[in-house]
Length: 170
Image 1: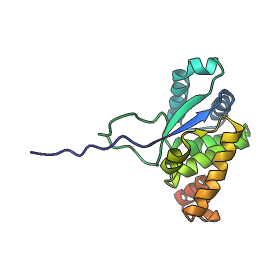
Image 2 (image 1 turned 60 degrees about the horizontal axis):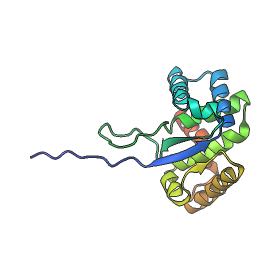
Image 3 (image 1 turned 120 degrees about the vertical axis):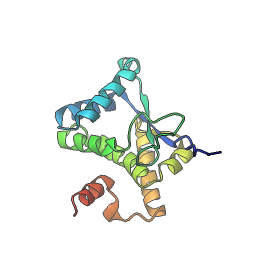
Image 4 (image 1 turned 90 degrees about the horizontal axis):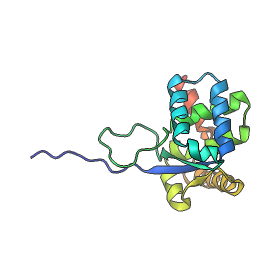
C-alpha cells in the first residue's frame, strides 16, 4: 500500500485594501512596465471584486504567509495573490510616484511574508488592515517589533531592495 503525502491547507495572510489603494495599484501597474502576466492576473483579480469596488468598499485579498510556490497537491483555499507580486507592485508605486505611503505599508506586508513571520502576525492580529490609518500604524509598529524579535538587521530591513541586490549579485 502506498501512501501519498497530503499537504495541509496553506497558511494565508489577509490584507484589507480600500478602493483608493486598489486604484493606486491599478494606476501604478498601468504606468510602469511590469510583467504582462502580473498585469493580467491583477486585472482578473479586480474583476472578481468589481462589485465591491464599484460600491467603494474595501476588499480583502489573501496572500500566502510565506514566499514560494505551493505544492501541486495542496488542498484547501488558495491565496488570491502571490507573495512575489508585492515587490513588483511596491516598485511600480515608487517608480510611478503614485503613492509612496502605500508602497511603505505594502513593504511591511512583504517583509512579514518574506521573513516568515506573516502567519505569526496574522494569528496575533487577524487581518492586515491596510485600509485604515490605525491598521497601517499597527502594521508598521508590529514590523519594528518583529524585526527586533527575529534579529533582522537594518541592512536587510528592506526585503525588496535586499532581494533585488542578491538577484544582481551585489
